[in-house]
Amino acid sequence: MIDLHTHTLFSDGELLPAELIRRAAVAGYTALAITDHVDLSNLDFIVPRIIESARVYGAAWGIQVVPGVELTHIPPVQIAAAAQRARQLGARILVCHGETLVEPVAPGTNAAALAADIDILSHPGLIGEDEVRLAAARGICLEITTRRGHSLANGHVAQLARKHGAKLVVNNDAHGPGDLVSPDLARKVAKGAGLTDEDYDQCLRNSAALVEKALK
Image 1 (spheres, rainbow, N blue to C red):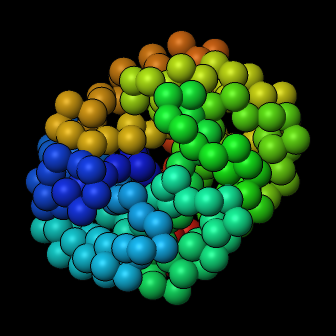
Image 2 (tube, one colour; image 1 turned 30 degrees about the horizontal axis):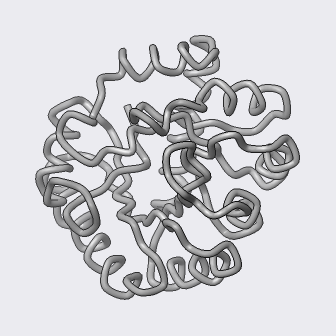
């Protein structure tokens, strides 16, 4: 199991990085990305601390940990610059908070994110077909999420991704201990969105490829 979308006390998560990583390791996860919420105001503070946490606690608990961020509620015109700054600071996985149905994300966020240097568009809500085609063309993964609320549009995302050949990943968007779901439940959530077992296995391969690229 790989989860490329998690949060710690550095943003709105419940756990210190050491505990998040330890719990993921005990739950059988092989890799984890810490992607705390950032905008242009806190990138300089958050990214170095996530990098250090990944270095120290990943080795200690025997799990691959990738330092990343989730660009969150950033005005669409600022997303590209924020992504560039995050890369400069050393973030290895870039997630952008998509137009979920349950938060007032600015219209145009999905499109701006997919035009920027990101790896994953998280919980993109009722994403349009043109945007899904752009994700496919640029190799950006769309997220199927196990998180309540954000998961309401999973079926829509899965359907359009399969239609247009966009890559998918399955993430928890973990904020607390109970959010680190088992591999069995993650597979069931994916199947509930209309994916087959083969589709889910491809999601795992997509996540593994992102980890490999990030840790080169």
